Length: 294
Image (cartoon, rainbow, N blue to C red; front, side, top):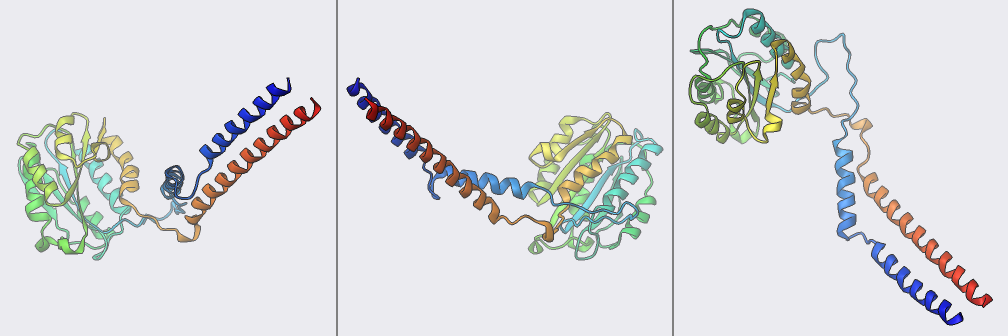
């Protein structure tokens, strides 16, 4: 009996040593680094609290500076009331942006069978003037020459002569295309050329919009750059999604100290080791007491 208990005590000691060695994590171990990285990512991904005054038209949002061109379909399939909803969507988007000469600049390209640049990036540097210009935009009627509109936006709206900042400034160039139909011209090649020139393209489809065409136009990842809504009444709901994508809100006073992530991981590691050591001591002590009574 005593020999059996000695064997049990010896085997348990070896097993506990292996367990403690397995779970002893040093600061340089991959598991710790992964845990620290995960904790840091979680804390960084938490949006800081926002305080918005609903009575104000202007938003607390501060977008990254960008050269933004809206490319809007005003073909015959877009009824006048529906086109008004598109213009409301553009106006609400403007409210979420930090519009100024050294911030975000906005232009609008209107298209159907022909293409018309309604105003350029250099034309308006405040929200009120921008929204007035949007309100004056009228539909162009027949046709859906989407490829041509992208080409003109790339070659004329996104130029320095039209108000775009030079590439050396590292200002993002963004195009948001809104359409409800299938393009009547080729879009794949011109869209690829626009993306290669540094333009990030978002494609918004409404109602009868062709999903394959939206995917051919948009930048990747497609899940972040392709949007679809069933009706023009739903298009304003996309404002919040674009707000999360385009806005950068800085609230330094309430931001959590990123060092707390590593401290939390270290505390959890120390607690785990302490519990394992206490458990091992308790088991060995219990076995020693049993052997002492034999």
